[in-house]
Image 1 (spheres, rainbow over the protein chains, first blue to last red):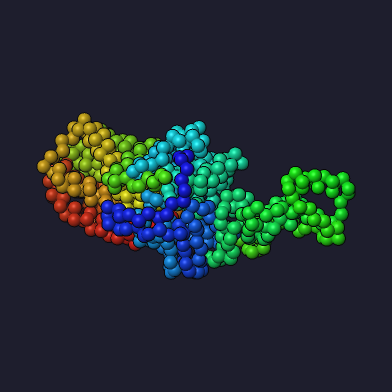
Image 2 (cartoon, chains in turn yellow, blue):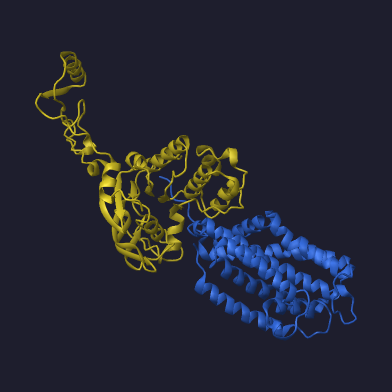
Length: 323
Length: 247
């Protein structure tokens, strides 16, 4: 990956064909009241969501919730029936030619021509860009070398996913859409993909991804949007959605976390609820001194409720019935 | 701070995609069989054996067979191969993916058409050389009409290929394109001159235009067939624009 990049404002400049990019915008993606139907099926029903520049935004939802439709509209592959869509400040339905050089896309199931060879395909897509990323570097980073000369139809699902990710990144995009980027990957490949996505954020690239993997969203996302039946039903940070209070009182040994709303430098607190043997209390006090935490005991209190996971929240909101 | 890569010039994108399409078509053994080997076999069978008799009106059989075989090769590439490749790319989502790059939909279609023409040049060179070796002496005066027939025939059959590939499932495209190819070969006037209403088919118009212009058969100038091909191009192109789905 290249050198460190910071989040970039949308540049105001005049391409040779005479359209000006809009002045700086806060959101790389902004959907407002978007409706989309396929026949009698309502895919999006007034969807409104935003994704901030330089952040990783994860869109979660059950099968058929409208995730991929929303992505396809942002990518310019579908037109919204109504509502407003802005990607990097532009309408993808009317400004696709301006957006394509700036947006990388990884569609669900890869979308790779089956007769092409892996590295040949990557080189082919790189030739669509004036100053593409070094193909060899992408091949190395994503471990594509062992199957570089293999035709796409002979690749495994995981190999196709990695190749599709490389294709999404070869144009040094400002914004990347990743539709289920680690679906079908083994743990090693998944970690490699996650590292690459995190590197994108470090480089200042905005990422909008969909996933069914809650641990993926919890690890990667700065902002999570949960949608169902074509509408946003919850959004926020992972901590915000899981109800973590950030006051350091919920768990034995927890420390205040500024990213969860606690003031920076606030003293940590260890709450001991219930009863403990003297040995445990001694060990805890030693631990507390080591980590400069205050110890509060409440022998009659109930044990703290375990923190909810993102999956708990997701199932509470979308139900447990199969779709 | 690293800038995004920007788009390469349109011509570079389209030519690059044309080369990509051409390599993929030529790499596919089944398609190579359909586009080069089968037409070559048909040519040899018609000219050197008595298995199938052409109505040649007293001419050397190769004068009638060679233009028809070229028409067959063009139809095979522009229609059958193109439809099957596009149908499977559509099912894989490849059309969508490439359309999101700076290539875009127009560049993708432009590259596809130029790629088909490039394959046809290879076919014409190989089959033309074989035909000349078998005694074909094309009428060079008919070259402008022949070039027009190749261009319009390619346009009409590419539109038909995209219409089928963009509306049917990949398996149906495979079956339908091969079946239609067979029917047009047998009764569509492409290799053997058709009669009656069948002469209005695009395959017959392409075959007749090439026979008239290159065969020296004295069967008209081929201009009427060019008009017919242009009409088919407009009709099929309009239907493709109306019904083609990218996904």
